[in-house]
Length: 101
Image (cartoon, rainbow, N blue to C red; front, side, top):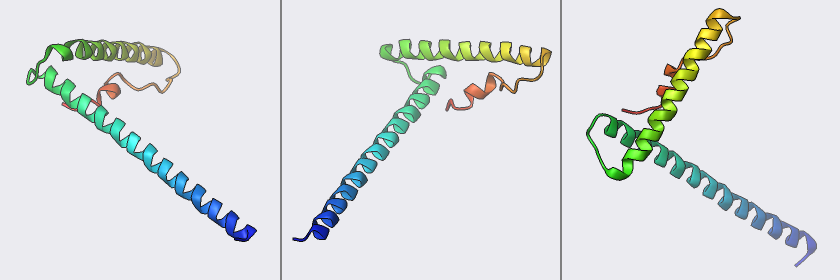
């Protein structure tokens, strides 16, 4: 096997390995998005009283607390923007747009 053939084989192997790694990264992203979507759905179901389980309570309360913090931060930023130069900060309602109910 000549030098050029060895270089070509090495390049093909590297490309194949890179493609496998890219597929793994893409699959991990899809898995993460699926977990995220499922979590939003469960949060909505618990919030509407359609689902209840003791292991969900702490997580739902934590998300509700975080959402309240964002809503409070959005309100104070809106107040500052109204009084100041219009800082372009969105309202707290933007944070709720991702919640699926």
